[in-house]
Image (tube, rainbow, N blue to C red):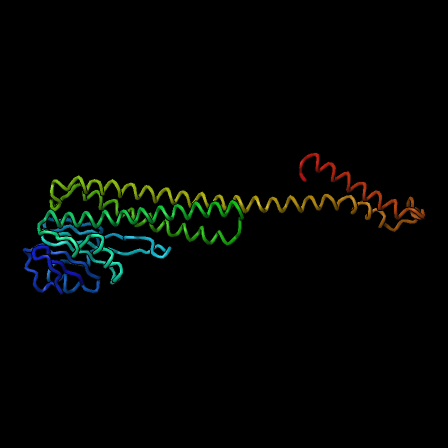
Length: 302
């Protein structure tokens, strides 16, 4: 748990000194919820996505970003009260450190007061949205690259990649749909915890949340088109193979007919006793194959 007292500009080891009057920023894991619940008088097991009353705002959403080329989803709960800002995430030390660095907690003096708590609230969401936008841009690049690979070679291994990408993008869209309601609540500001001069900043967050959701919808459409492209490429590849097999069949048709005729067991077959009959038959086969090749070249099937 990380506790920072905005009044004293000091990091605290816990919430034991919290008196409810001084502004405090808290970054903690869900495993710390019992201590925080008792000290702040909160219900940390709420099941709503957004809840607002005269004392505090509650937001629950799923944050995602790219880490080591993999998309990481992180459930995040935020409680914004008159004298506190609480951010709850999983117990991931690297992510905790990253949030503190983004907010410059402990590096830049932050005075107490509702305005500064609201600024931290806004700054956290702004950074989170920027990272989610960046993740979607990179996924868009991944889908575009995959389309190029499919056009170059319609390998069956790409189907698994498409299915994986589609699953992740639809998961992103599902989580962002819930975030849209949060943006609407920012605009309404029912609790009045967002100062009037910062309302415009939170309206901008609502706008970015809407753009982020629209971006996810576009990515969903892109993955659908990629699947269609893959199916078209596989169909085209199959058709090309069938065409080649058909051409080979056409070349073999005339020799098969001639050999079939002279394979019949009739006594009085023309040329059966001719000493040059074998070579005449081979010549007829060669001529038929050459004629077929010439015709196919003329109609540009070869």
